[in-house]
Length: 376
View 1 (cartoon, rainbow, N blue to C red):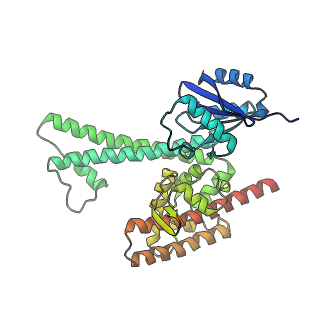
View 2 (cartoon, rainbow, N blue to C red; view 1 turned 30 degrees about the horizontal axis):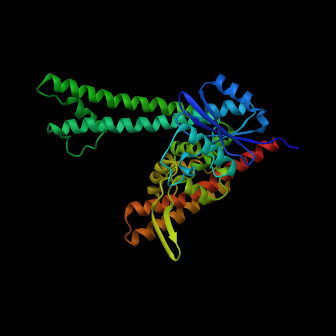
View 3 (cartoon, rainbow, N blue to C red; view 1 turned 120 degrees about the horizontal axis):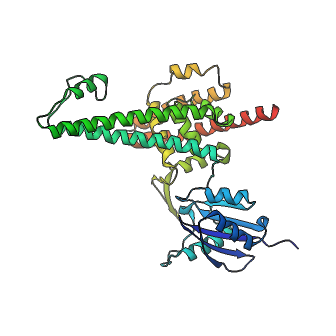
């Protein structure tokens, strides 16, 4: 007779883990609360039985994937699930760690939970680096706003014809002087903060370049192939690669579109079908770079110098998909724009279709790299 599988739900917090287990057709039972420490988790697993009989799940959250890595190293099957997709009862008004753990165990046994992609340590390190650069760009924008609005409040205007943040603009900013020493001290501090954020971005971008050189062959191939698309330079390609993880986990392009949160929401009942705004339930980092890239397709199809340089390095299939993307997406933009659709909706529609071409190129790059690796 085979051994009974035990489904374990863990409600994970920074300091504690509430644990519940269910087996067979029984009801979930709470095992109490343990410390969120490796030795405490190891002792718990020793009491639960053989690792091969355990199926553990917990919700993705601020504690990351440390627990997942520990459990998999111990031979336990573990899945990290999406918190927003955990089933909830409308009438529930009591929420405790014990109940959450029991609900996870019960839902895991019935197959109602949706696992998330868990990157390996190298992949997560590059993703953290890319997100740090994104955060630095936001900090730089805030610093620039503080400086420009400070000058505006005192009636300081840049010379006519000079664009903001160009060399001409900076030469003018450094010549600005106020009557009071306190004002000049504030101005110098705002200037220093803008320069500091610029230097921070340069360091991070250099680190990203170095990390790409050391990345696995599959990821490097995907990053290079994605740059064949218009509006997708190196940093955008890296963002797409690290946020998607692997394109092979999406069987269809529509699944990746849903993952980005750029598909319309829908409420259908009987003969009544109503679609609304995009769901925005997916990865917001992906959504940001896709919207930025989509704006490039308002221009007529053509190859930039960057794209021409890649022509000899990439496979004909990838180049064909990239060119078809330009033709189709430009027509899509022109058609919607001619119907006087709002610009935001037009670009969102173009970005959603762009995801399909990104999916095709990513899958092709991963497949060809895997084939070459096997042949070698």
